[in-house]
Length: 300
Image (tube, rainbow, N blue to C red; front, top):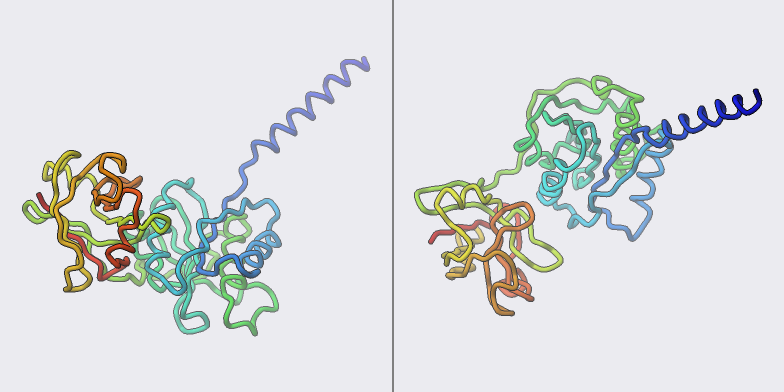
């Protein structure tokens, strides 16, 4: 009898342990231009854990260049689709903090949530993932208690707090605040397009560690004009109306396909057209940057 009871008790314990291990931890993903030199990121995470200790807290990046809303927009699009539906992203690149810009949560058609100022940060995910609904954060409800006198750290007091409440299920999406039109502020940019045998696009971001040039031209457009590895391409790069690069270079699979120090074109990890120098820094060598205003044309 005692043995049966002990076996039953052991079985219950095993079930409880397995149940806890399998419990889904809501994901809250942070992005900012704060860097990690001070306690700003830690403060946001502390607020989130104060809302719910069961949250899974993750970092997208905190190395967005200061005030660079466009790069914040790009990094969200680069990353979001790899996270499960229901993930809540808190993105704080907010040069207009404390002003009349709106604080919003956008739910995408893919089921992801983005908590951020509506200042252009949502430009690319709104376009690629689609907008399901946008709500303005009601700070009378969704703001950290006793923070009303703080006007310069909404990342901690509004965004991290609201994002944590949403991820933890403490509030429903319709409790974020009033519904807004299904649109967001967008930063104008050159989309990737095909015009006869020429492809045009822009440089949304640099591969910052190595100085490679990433464009928004997908492999599908290269296939549309029958460009394949082994071809020689004419690549032209412009900053506004000024030509900063005009050269014919090989389109290859990988860096070792050209001699060290030579320029090359390839598909990056997102299967987008990119340009590099093997074992070198293309952006530094040719003094290039990224963002709207940096455009690319390529042809045979």
